[in-house]
Structure formats: structure tokens, C-alpha cells
Length: 311
Ligand SMILES: NC(=O)c1ccc[n+]([C@@H]2O[C@H](COP(=O)([O-])OP(=O)(O)OC[C@H]3O[C@@H](n4cnc5c(N)ncnc54)[C@H](O)[C@@H]3O)[C@@H](O)[C@H]2O)c1
Ligand SMILES: O=C(O)C[C@H](O)C(=O)O
Image (cartoon, rainbow, N blue to C red; front, side, top):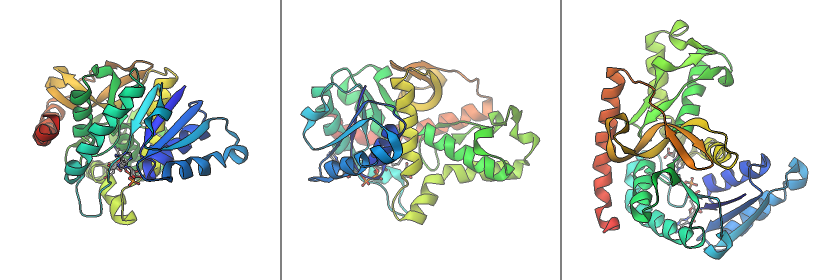
């Protein structure tokens, strides 16, 4: 199976590294607009093959989309990341043009690919990709919820002082500092509600920390994070290529599900060889429904800024 990753920067290259290290795909093409950059990243990753023991072929391309032909999955990470103090939404002006051009180019050579959108503001870039390409909704997947959920589980595990892998939990809604919805009511420690072990005050702090998880890392690193984002994309790609049918919160075009239409927003999805195979209704309570509606209002307002690029 072949995966193309457009944008060989921090997130794209990390994703290529995880995909090859874990043998998720037989071939990975990294493509970047910066001369020689993707080739360099691919060569560096390939030089791990004998020491970490993988057989995936990783190659690089400077903006030559013919090298990406017949990809099963295309990941779009091209664009600029935020700097400390910025919101993801401030990236829309530059990233919208980049994402639209990239989506058009990849489809010329991989007309059947499933597209995973990573560039920020991710929900808006996912909506843009869907509207610009006209592809069916199962083939356009926004990655944000997998990452936000892994951060939620991290913060829960820290509060519980227990391993992350013993914690279950999901984040839905927008992939934004104020639009994310960590579902604390449904989070569990090995099947027991986390509220059996943590006070409401601690749970509120876990949720707040999760929502600004990306901003916290951006403040510490000077640019946005890449290890967990790259690994989260690889996790999603694994579920597609290996038809794992994992339930992963993803940004998907909604047509009445969760009470919303004409918007891409994070909801729990079954991810398999056809991309989004099902949107799962996890029965939100009234308070969660209200948060989801508020999140949708904010993301919809941002989508309004796409008029120029979509016309
Ligand atoms: N959805 C998420 O969960 C999530 C997580 C992390 C980062 N992001 C977003 O992903 C994007 C990339 O982040 P990063 O840290 O890898 O940034 P980066 O600057 O390290 O890499 C971006 C790469 O895109 C390339 N690029 C720019 N325009 C291009 C074009 N037209 N064609 C091909 N390549 C092009 C750049 O040359 C650069 O190498 C940002 O928008 C960031 O906000 C999203
Ligand atoms: O925080 C960012 O801007 C990048 C990404 O969306 C993240 O959550 O790490």
C-alpha cells in the first residue's frame, strides 16, 4: 500500500517515520515545495531501515506529483504552523490556498485516494478539501480528535498516576483551543468511570489542560508539536490501510448527525479501508449537546472565511 505525505516538515516527516518504523505501508512518498527537503527527510528515514529493521520504501519529491501516483492514502500537512500566542484559526489566510492547491494536485495522480487533512485550522481545511474536490464524505478525514484524545488520556493518566494505556477517553468537537470537547463523563480507568477516582475539580482541570494542549506545547517548543501529531496520523492511516475499523474521533462532513449539517467537525467514526465507514452516535447528554452546538457555531463562522478561496 502506498501513502503520500504532502509537507515533509515536522508533522509530515514524523508521520513518515512512524509509518515506516511500524511497517504500516509498503511505500511512503514525502513531497514538499522546498527544494531537496523531502528527499533529505526520506533519505534520513531510510537510513534507519537496518537499525530499526523496517522494509517500507520511503522516497522524497520536490513538488513532483507524478511520484505520488496511485497512492491509497494522501496526508496533507503542508502549510504553516502557529507560533506561541497565536490561535490555529489565524493560519487560515495562508493555509487555505496551500491546502486547496495540494488537494487538486494529488487527485490528478491518485483519483481514488482517501485524503487525511492535518493542516490547521483543521476542521475548516477539511471542509475546504471536501468542497473543493467534491469527493464523497467517506474519503475526506480530518485528523485532530485522535491527537486530542491521546492528550486527554495523557492528562487523565497523570492525574490518576496510572499508565496512559489503562485509560480510555475521547475528545469530540472542533480541533481548537475553545471548541474541543473532552468527554469526561464517558472517560474510564480500565472500565470504571474516572469520576470514581478523581474529583470534579481535577476533572475540570484535565479538560481545560487538554483543550489548550497544543497551545501549551507551542509555548514550550516555539512552534507547534509534531511527535504526537505525526503518530496520531499514522494511527489513523493504519486503521484505513489495514481495515481495522477502529473508532476514532475524526472531523467529517455532517449531514444531520449530531444535529449539524454542512460542516466538518469531530465525531466518533469507524475508520476502515473505505475511510469513514460509520459515524457512531454515542448519545450525548444535554450539556454535551449544547457544547457541541456551540463548537459548531464557532467552526461554521470560520468556514465563512473560505468564500474567496472556494469561489
Ligand atoms: N490537525 C492536527 O492535529 C495538527 C497537529 C500538528 C500540526 N498541525 C498543522 O500541520 C501543519 C504542518 O505543521 P508542521 O509542524 O509540520 O509545520 P512545518 O513548517 O514543519 O512543515 C510544513 C511543511 O509544509 C511545506 N509546504 C508549504 N507549502 C507547501 C506546498 N504548497 N506544497 C508542499 N509543501 C508545502 C513546507 O515547506 C514545510 O516543510 C500546520 O498547519 C500545523 O498547524 C495540525
Ligand atoms: O497546536 C497546534 O497549533 C498544532 C496542532 O493542532 C496541535 O494540536 O498540536
